[in-house]
Structures are given as structure tokens and as C-alpha cells.
Length: 508
Ligand code: FAD
Ligand code: SF4
Image 1 (cartoon, protein in one colour):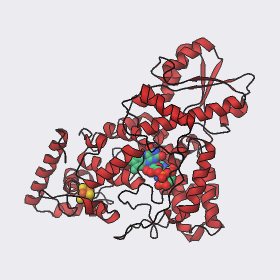
Image 2 (cartoon, rainbow, N blue to C red; image 1 turned 60 degrees about the vertical axis):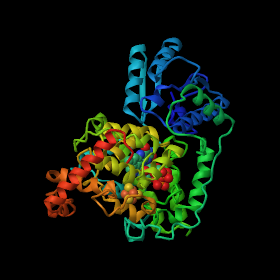
Image 3 (cartoon, helix red, strand yellow; image 1 turned 90 degrees about the vertical axis):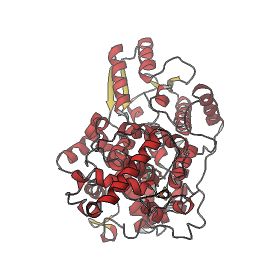
């Protein structure tokens, strides 16, 4: 069985199989696009990449049982699999470790019910096995990314020189993370685009007929859908954007969704590309003098560090991720997350771009959409459902820790020692959004106050007990401790009014 995010060619599970004896099985089901509303472009990407994979496997002589959307009546993967197990009577089903525990539970139930053995194979397309991660995390009180990353650099000998980190440092943050200044980014390289071929156009048509109510649009769909295209996208990134990646990785600019970002997460998560070749390409660019070490390190840290780390954490804590709500957040997700209809220009830009492309870069996800949800106090399940459906690269193993842990702090600090919270001034510094906004990032009170800034002070106030005496957060909370009571009360009132207006569906 090959799932939609396991499309490597050659596929690692096929090495031990033979077309004369074994068959492949794949299915497209509406349930996977509806259990959380999945962006049209995300759905197109998965189905198109699956159909390209299937075509190639047939050409290679494999028998393939493929259930296309609209050609069967089943809603879930579990149901279509169970029906086929009863019809085809295989002696065993093998699948690579699914990227979402819910999916694995469904497959287990289908196989159990049909009396067929299910074997879940460990996925060699990740660099760290789940067992190795759990052993590493289990031995630590606080399994932090930085320690994990350094261990992996040593273990895999990546950007190392004589056992020491290249350049004598593990981290080049001081050279990275700049903003563009008033003059803006200037002329940016245009990323290589992959306009829909005939097969993708057919998928777009099927989705328009079968799943017409999905959020988001796909007129601008240009994601790589085959391993060959993904490799071209990687080459394009290494040649034209990697040298500036680190420097501007946290910067944002109106109307510029890509900046110097890789646009590789979807290809990586669908296994059209493997992390080994991506890391080798970045390291090679540094060795050849094409890319400064700070840029190569900043990028390698994302792939070898963050990506492997969040996967390990997802499976390490398992279904508990769904239960956590450490900050007792209870607000519904505001409607503006589905239509970008807001006067808050940063949210209008980040969400508008997301609905158009299924993409926003890390800081837009963390410090605009994620920050607003956290300051407002949106229920973790609601914001998780949005992120899981709305980005083309979303698979639960990577989305969940980033949202519940890094962005919402609902995991009680298991992932990050302190919440990523800031006023609108952070957004003002890192982008040009505020120059086009009717609100003022420095103001917390009054009609022109930036809602981020009002909600920031209210957040500090609401969570004093938890953070004011913690060594990592005390300094940040000290400012609210010093605020005079009258001002604080006015902020509480204004924050409550913001929440009420959003609950009522009013435009803010
Ligand atoms: P770049 O910014 O160019 O980064 C290069 C690569 O590093 C990415 O392709 C990705 O594979 C990896 N990477 C970078 N940051 C992370 C991270 N924090 N965790 C894991 N891998 C990382 N990434 C997803 O792949 N799927 C998600 O569903 C997802 N949801 C997120 C939700 C939130 C709230 C946040 C804060 C981050 C999320 N990320 C997710 C991480 C990151 O935002 C995306 O990987 C990145 O924006 C993808 O764009 P890019 O390929 O241009 O990445
Ligand atoms: Fe966003 Fe506030 Fe800046 Fe407006 S003023 S763009 S709401 S941070």
C-alpha cells in the first residue's frame, strides 16, 4: 500500500517485493480532503503526485489497484481498503510508517476486520528512526532541538571539519534573520514553476466536480508533482536563492510570497525528494564557494534539525498532542482565517496568499497567523485543523508539533521553553505590512490600536502566574508587572471587545 505522502521512486518498500507475486494498492478518498477542510491546491498536489507515481509504476510492470476519486463510493481509506481486502484476499498488507496516527489506526482497523496481517515498515526516507529518536528524547528532561541538531551533525558528519562544526560555530544567527529595510527586497529571483500538465489538469477538473467546496484556489498551481520536477526545483533553489536564505529567512514583504525560501517542503513531505540529497546539495554549494556557510548552515538546520526533530516529537508523544491545551485557550477560529477579510493588513496578506497558493513561509505562519491565534486564545484543535488543511505541505507529523508546540505553546513547553509572543512592532520591524495598515503597531489602546499589541499585553496579564517567575520568561513579563492598573484594566476591556467582535463575525 502506498500512501499519498510516500511517493519516492524507487519506493523503498518495493525493494523486497516482486511484480510477479505482489501488487500495489492506492486510493483517493474524499474523507482525506474533508476530515479537515483541505485547500484545493493541497488536494490537487497529493492526487496529481499520486497519479504520476501510479503511471510510472504501471510502466515498470507492477500490478496496481488504484481507486480514483469519483470512481468508487467509499468515503474513507479504511472503508475502501477493507472492501478490497475481502475481494482480493492478500496474505499481507505492507505500508511505510504513515505520517498521521489517525491514518494508521484506520488501516489497522480495516486489516483487523478483514483478517489480514498489516506490517508497518519503518520509513528510511527520514534520517532518524523513531526508535532512535525516542531513545534520545527519553534520556532527556528537556529534549531541545539544538542538542538534537548538534548530535545529528556529528553523527552524519554534515558541515563538520575535524570533528568540529565548520566555521567553529554551530549557529550563525547573528548573520541571519535580517529585515529588508525601507527600500525592500529589490529584484527577487523568480522560482522555477511547474504549470499543470494534462494529468494535473484532469485532477483539477475531478476535484472541481467531486469536491467543489474545498477552501483555497488553484489557478496559480505550479508545484512539482514528480521526483524529476522536485530535483529541478531543488537545483533552482540552490543556484538562485540559497545564498540569501539565512540572511532573509525571517523577513516578510507584501506581495512577495517566496522571497529566498526553498519551496521544497511539499516535495520533501510527499517523498518526491529525500532529505539526504537536499542536505548534500546545500553542503556542496558551500564547499564550491557558491554559498556562504551561514546560509548553508541556516538551511541545513531546518532540514536536519527542525524537520527530523518535529517528526520524532510527533511520534514520541503520539495521540497526546490532540489533548494538550496548556494555556486553556477556548476561542473559536475567527472567520477571517477562511476569507482574509480583515483590516489587519499583515493577516490580510498572509491569509490571502495562503488561500491563493496554499503557502506561507515560516515567519508568516509563526509570527502572523500563529501569533494572532495564540494571543487571541484560539482552541488548539481549531487552529490545528486550519493548519493541517490549508498548507500544501501539511502532514500531521510536521504540522502538529509546529502548531500545538512551537506556535501555540499548548504542549506546556515540551517543545519550546517559552511562547513566541510579540506586539505588532515585531511585524513592523520584519515587514512592510504596517505601512499599509489602518492600525498602529505601537498603540495598545484606542480606535487605531493594533489588535496584536492590545492582545499581547492582555496575554501577558492573563498568563502571569505561569510565566512571570520562570527564569526564561520573567524579563518579558516584568513589563506587565510594572504597568499601572488603570492602563491594564483598559487593555483587558479592549481585548475582551476584540474577542467579542470576532466571535460575532464582525470585521476587524
Ligand atoms: P524554507 O523556509 O525554505 O525552509 C527549508 C525547509 O526546511 C522546508 O522545506 C522544510 O522542509 C524545513 N523546515 C523549515 N522549518 C521547519 C519546521 N519548523 N519544521 C519542519 N520542517 C521545517 N512545515 C511543513 O512542512 N508542513 C507543515 O504543515 C508545517 N506547518 C507549520 C505550521 C506552523 C504554525 C509553523 C510555525 C511552521 C510550519 N511548518 C510546516 C514549517 C515551515 O513553516 C515550512 O516547512 C516552510 O514554511 C515551508 O516552506 P519552504 O519549503 O519554502 O521552507
Ligand atoms: Fe498587523 Fe498591527 Fe501591523 Fe496592522 S499594525 S499590519 S495589524 S501588526
